[in-house]
Length: 213
Image (cartoon, rainbow, N blue to C red; front, side, top):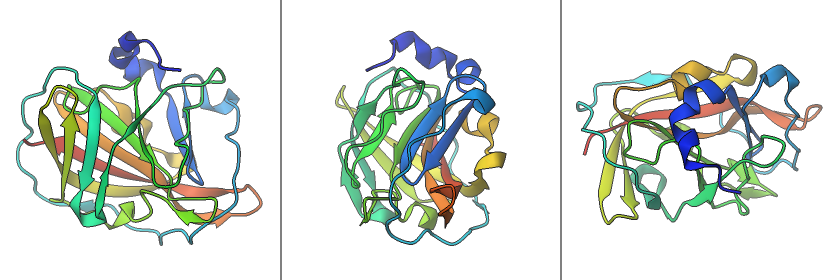
């Protein structure tokens, strides 16, 4: 179910954490310690090795745009060209999960790509034995371009600023979802090692990008 549009402006205060587990993405909108655990799934392709955050110079951020939903996502380095699907929140506060390994979802409770603030796209690293749309997300580097076509006919370009990998118990919530003075983009999936006892991956991989065109 699509959350009310007004929630986009309250992302910082309402969104406490995101946990990406085996391609199951859970957004906790209350105290993370009291939130339900995401459901588990079988492991698929091996997780990417731990990577250090990469940094580099990128062009200055472009002026934010008005709201418009994303209709196409292109990431050259990943060979990815797909139509994102909207993801809302379930009654238990968890984010809807893309229905297929190759599907990318955009969180409707966050700004749309190009608006001021951090737009959020998430996808599986693997799912039911198949590599996910973000299986190689960790390979992105500073300076890589991400193109998003929007429903109003415009195209916005984001430039990757850096890539980080974080243990789930040290997820940088404020850094990922904090209020921005410009339009940003976050691509999120899971990473690290698959913990069979917990039936989830140990880490999250997050790409930080800024609007530059």
